[in-house]
Image: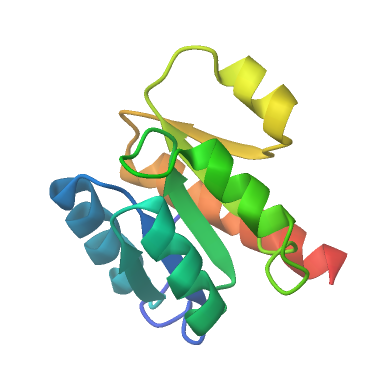
Length: 133
């Protein structure tokens, strides 16, 4: 799934991961597609940035220090201004089916994932968000 450079212009994506190399990879890959990328390295920063940036999509790691992905999801879903933002969960954890069932996550990228899977999942999540709006 290759976009023309700049095709994601105006679309804000918040990337949340505690591993600097993962954040750097995602920032580069998404920026090359024209997305406006914002970064957070833990759940607390994710909530702050989500409130200030109002992203169209959040790509979030599941296992993070200070605030677990499930806690962030609960906080997002409990906030009327943030609850409709689609979240793509990135995880290397076992029990993905249980996470999906418990937290109602629609999109999961199982680590390690490649560029094609990343871009395809981002496109699906953004398209679904547009359909719901």
